[in-house]
Image (cartoon, rainbow, N blue to C red; front, side, top):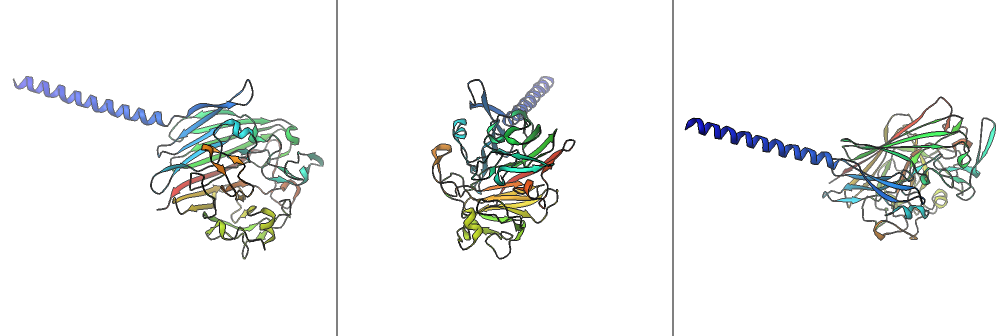
Length: 387
C-alpha cells in the first residue's frame, strides 16, 4: 500500500512540475510574442507600391510605430505618472495624411536638414542649385526629400527591437552631388528610449545633415499647446538668423536673452517677447542652439518636463547642435490622428544636427562628406516620469 501511495505521490509531483513548466513556457512565449515587430499595410504610395507600418514594443509597454514611407515615426506611446500610456507625437492616421503635405511630422530629414541660403552652395569649386521650397531658401532636402521616399525596411526582433532603413539618393537628386547610401536604425530600448543611429557614405564629395522631425506634446491627447512644457537646453550659445531664418554666422551667448534655457524654463515664459528681434523673425523659437559640449561624444543636449503628466523627455546626441522649434507655423488647418486639429504651438521639435547653412559658412563645423569617409551620428530620445 505504501508503494502505491508513493507511486501516486510521485506521479502527482511530476504532473504538477510538468504543468508549472508548461505554464512557464507559455508565459515566456507570450512575452516573446508581445515583443515581436508587427507589420501592417499603411496605404499605397502608388498603384503598385504599398507602404508598411512597423510596430516596435518593449517589455515596459512602450510602443513606437514607424513607416517605411519617409522613415516616419507615426506614433509613440509613453506612460504618465499614473501609468497611463498616451501617444505623444503629432502625426496622421494613414499614409494619405502624410501625402497631403504635412510639416514633416516624425519624418527622417535629408539629404540636408534645415535651411541652405538661396538654395545654392559651392563645393570643390563647383556650384550646386537646389529647389527653393522655403521662401528664397532650400529646406529639409528639397521638394522630395528623404521624408517623401520609400525606404527599404528590415525589422530586427529582440528584447530591444530595431528597424533598419536604407535608401540610396542618386547623384543629382534634388540638386545634391554624389550617390549617397544612407542607413538609419531605430532601436526601442528597455529603458523607454528610442535610439536613432545614422550612417551614410558617398561616391562623390557632398554635404549631409540628417535628423528626425518628431513633434512632441508630452501631455498626450493633442488638445492643448506646449507652452507649459519646461525646457532645459545644455547650450550657452545660439545662432541668430536673418528675416528668412538663415544664420547670420554669429554664435551669440544666450545669457540675458529669451534664448537662455540653461536653467529649466517654461516655453511660454518669453516666447512672445516681440521686443526681441530674433523672436519676431522666428515667430517664436525656430533656432539652432550650439551645445556647450560640441564633441562627438553622446551627451545630454536637452530635457523637457510636462508637469500635468509628469512625463520627462531627455535628448542625447553626438551632434554639435539642436534646433528647437515650437510649432509656430501650425495654424489649425491640419487634422491629425483621431480627428484632432493641430493648432498653433501644439507640438515642439528637438532636431539634433549640424548648423543650418553650413555649406555657405566656412567657419561653421563642416558638413562635407567625401568618398572613403563614413558619416555616423547617434541620437537618443529617452522618456521617464517625475512623480
